[in-house]
Length: 336
Image 1 (tube, helix red, strand yellow):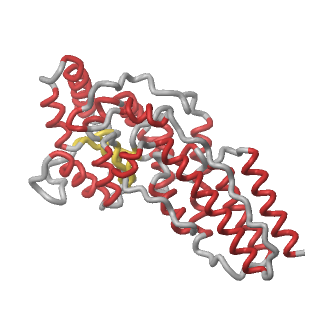
Image 2 (spheres, rainbow, N blue to C red; image 1 turned 60 degrees about the vertical axis):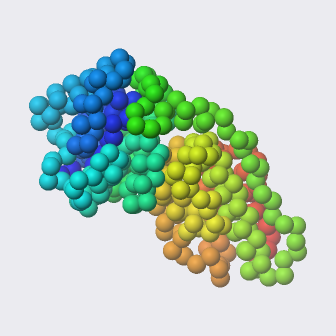
């Protein structure tokens, strides 16, 4: 079995067959395999008799899967009858069971545009990928490989820098009404094109601090709350309110641990465009350290990390850079 597994559902296959084809083609470079759940094969067979366009696409997918399985292509395989955790499940529950089976044996990601199914997967600690405009097979493969520990962030960034289609929209037609209540990607893209206004950075309270601890407290609070405002902005750009409910997204608390949990949960689907994978590693190391009793060097390191996160999320907006410089100036004055 490959070190990482990409389980694809019916709607993702029909709407994004080009991405799946490319993922299969590059499987050797990134050490993954695409798995087709048994339920998906049954659903595709049923869709052959659907509307003309859906039927055509279902037949196209079936033809592709049959061809690759007949070739015994190591980049794609079907779910065997013995590969389940709980038997006699149907529909989405059966696909989720497939994910659970493979997640016990390899790093597993569900590729689905069905928000309800994705929410169930996330509840069971299975990573998910949903299509958004600009997503490429290399982008998916890199982030899966890095998240699985199969590739360093630096090597992943090298792959992305060589990707000619990076950040370009997929050309595959995908705007048919999806089957079985899946969300249409056209709806998701439309919501992403109507973002709220980027929030302004928060300012440090204009107080005369009586102690280092009170200054540190306000600097940390201001920095974390600015980051949270940018996270909220990014999440509402990526998803509608209804989709955020499906994903069980909650606004993080102003702590490094709470912020890191949001980044970890949505690192592939949302935050991959904001900062490189190495930043996640630095954050995971940082939250292990206490946020009190700093010395000057330690506090500078803390501000550099979380200030960098803030700048990445704001896409280096000048107002945020100015705000970070102001925070650093306060710290420098206090420690003089």
